[in-house]
Image (cartoon, rainbow, N blue to C red; front, side, top):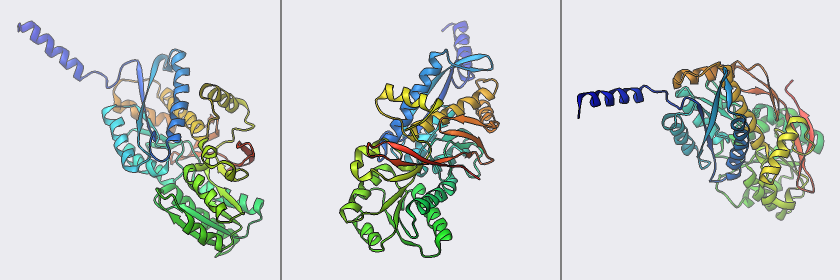
Length: 389
């Protein structure tokens, strides 16, 4: 090899090693979502929503950051709805794919451990759907687009007491799910503080993989509660409610935001009609930008977007706003990640399709919740809105 050629190769290698960590005109964002496992519809909703948003921005020439246009590249990784997979997925997106920021995980069971990985590696993470306080607590690199369970729990209690005239309650929850367990405990404590000690007549748990809930439901029904609170994922609700009806329970149920998948009615059918749950937005009767999003999503994909889809839209837009607030991107990944984190933290208020929000010192949005009722057509109809005091 000629001396000049060898020198040229060394120069080229040096340039490659010192080049920006990502393409100069591309912004890479990772999505840590459950495309398989127990709740694949959650991952599908996130991906479809993100793809629609990406098409909008790239179709307009890219995201404007400091006067320069950047094309968006979204990398979707399956966490299988498992905590350990969410951790390995986060590490892959951060270290191998070298994303600028990460959307998800959605479920608190995956978001809590993945949030620790993001914070340790100083990479922005925003969870669209996680409501457990531990996801963001004392983690300056982690944000969310959803309200928290300490807010959602009292919403469910107050609605049930007012609407069902309930004086007693029972609870059935998933012991191995951070979200379900945490919200169940908050609900129990708030209900008993409001209605008196001992008014939660039964507090029963189950495992994530359980299919038969007859033992727990038999105990619950025997106490004759005024209603049953079930803070479980939609796939579990679709088993629990019909089994309760077969055991003779004719009373009320109250649910939480994990009921909010469009798949709920496909799996549950008539048994879930008329029931209520707290959630992030109501598709039926929506107006303005929210209705525009719903109409576009429905036309494009053939079904009404659930709360995960809407929250993913908001969460991704929050990240993009943070990138724009950074002012410019240098191509040096660590520096740019820090600028994006600071850019999100600087957002004073944000007009989301799931409601207006502003972020507190923990990276949590201050926003309203809604209670919906499942209509006889299977639609999630708005009943009332509850905002932080």
